[in-house]
Image 1 (tube, rainbow, N blue to C red):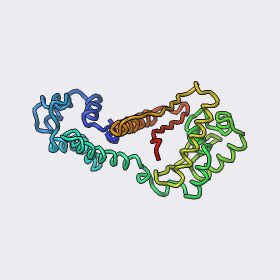
Image 2: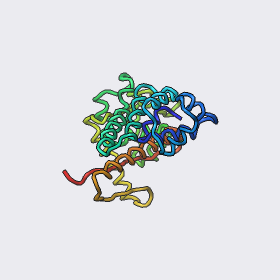
Image 3: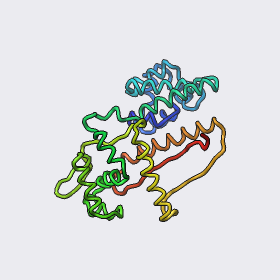
Image 4: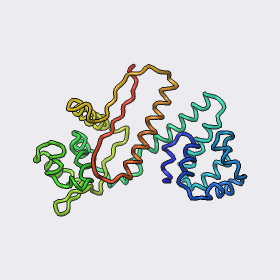
Length: 269
């Protein structure tokens, strides 16, 4: 189990269940030894009969090989579960949400020299075309300009100009007329002024696809009235689902290309 998958969970038991599912036989015995407890404690913890103590959680951190951020996050999950009042659980949930947000802003983990300049970002996010070409270039079937143009239904000369731009940036790489993703990264942090264009580009494309054939893909729109408490639950569910989708896509072979847009927002100003 990958260590960064802990951020896909907002409950420590769910995380431990996932860990034990992929662990070798005898792991629970080793965990009990590392925690200095009887083997009967783990089933009680997993069955929600008792909670892990903070000291046991810290020993779990060591056993699981968590780094500092992961260890802090795991402790937050345990604290939330141990909280005895709703206000305290909410406070811990806010801490958890903040930690997940920090992890989702992955731009700080990308070397600055490997990202494109502000000026080039302006052009890259002026249209969905550039991101679409970048994604398609990772699929062997669409490794040439004519095939990408045909797949997107755009004029070949337009795609050719866009490909030249991406090649110059290093976002694309070309060898023997075959295109592949390059070594430079394109990533926008949530506070970027270009994040609006990025979202609008794909939502306009989604509208276009709905008009073409609303039944061909999965589209959902709905207005809901609900409690403030359930608003937080739904945000948590959607964030977890997006993390799960991303994890699946990361390991998936490059065969086709899809776009994910998720919207959940208040109707009130």
